[in-house]
Amino acid sequence: MLKPDFSLIRDYTLALARTRRQTGITKFQRGNKTLFYVNAHHVSGIRNKTCQTVKLAITRFNPDTIVIERNLTSESRRRGFLKHIHQQSASGFRQGGEGAYAAWLAVQNKIPFVAAEPSDQFILSEMQKKGFSAVDVVGYYLIRTIPQWQREKTLQSDFEKQATGFLKWMSTTIGLPKDKFVTYPEFQNWFATHNETGRSILEIKNGDLGPIVSGSMTYFQKLAFDMTRIREKRIETVISEALSNNNTVLAIYGDSHLVVSRRVFQKMLGPGVAVRPRQISRLNATHAPIRRFSK
Image (cartoon, rainbow, N blue to C red; front, top):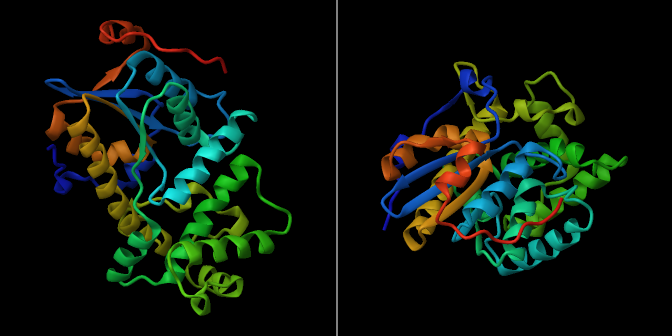
């Protein structure tokens, strides 16, 4: 059984955050165990390099299993996600991004896929151990979702109504009793108290919310740092388990995750090498082609 060394997880520094890395494929291999890792830039739709790279990796490498950036820790979540990806396949994956697209390709090609995100209840429990509250966790989840809504063009004109629905859903998801649900006024007060970005709620950017380690971390960045460490350990565990049970695994995750976890996979499988498009046919010469799907 392959086991990740969590002590090798790197801090995501300001210098790393400012480095623009192109979406690509990194190959880690030791013996008959191969991990292909797509460092994705989160997108809407499929006419972009991230989804083109995802499709290329699946159709050329024919992985035994695929690891995606989703929380599907309950059967109801998985059923809902499968329904969602089939709906999105008809609209060009305007919602759901590269993870939904990868899962749909996996289903179409009869390739198993697993979701590597921990449950929201587990994240809350671990964050409370670090001194954060349920309002911190739920509030952060909401502001983290706003840039996604904007990217997918699903931000509603009545933001208070949309946010209230999200807060109720997330409070339920993380297991809060009804009398402890996070309300919109509580969220507004929390945001006003901890917002150090100089932006309003609807102006928040992904760059304001990253787990960037510096001498002057904002409250949102501290939340993101601790939450990311919890997530990263789960992600690396799921990928390691997938590799223990399969020979070829494809992981599709946001770019910063590979930056902080590269050394973990290097210790496990050896130095990672970038796979160039012209190299793919040579590296995959022994893999039988599978069905191609038009965009």
